Image (cartoon, rainbow, N blue to C red):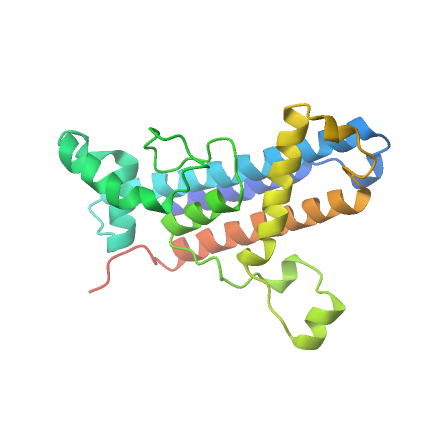
Length: 227
């Protein structure tokens, strides 16, 4: 994995995920709406998980080339590669310091993988992934990725990742209700065109910004230790 390959994979991955999404006009019945929600979630989790893994593969290869990473990424790559596995006591000590950043409700108790969505990519898990990638949840979202509301235009307000917390959690909740066949999926207002459009446009915005943030880190060598 190198920079050029990472950028290429990111472009292809995002294009592939977007292409998988059906158009909203095709949602003619309850089942097609449910299927669309499942596809939105699948695209979101798949893209975030794959891109994060590729990012750490890139960092791992930079280490192999003898490059020195800054303290944050060096620490995370050590956990990603499980370099301290030989010294099990040291490895357990590191994870005891690190695991409080993981919400116990979102992750398997004994799962020590650094990149882990646990098939439940809600906002707490997404925030954890932002943390290991050294991206702030308050990072401004590029306004080119979304349409501002009239209120936002008047107040010159900027969105950030935290703005999309309810959308991410709402998508996960709906996805789990559908996947587990909860009776509420038959309620008339369970899924409306407005809800689905909010999920679709919101998740697409997040994926585009996420890709941009990782490419910015790599393009500007922000993961290297500075003299």
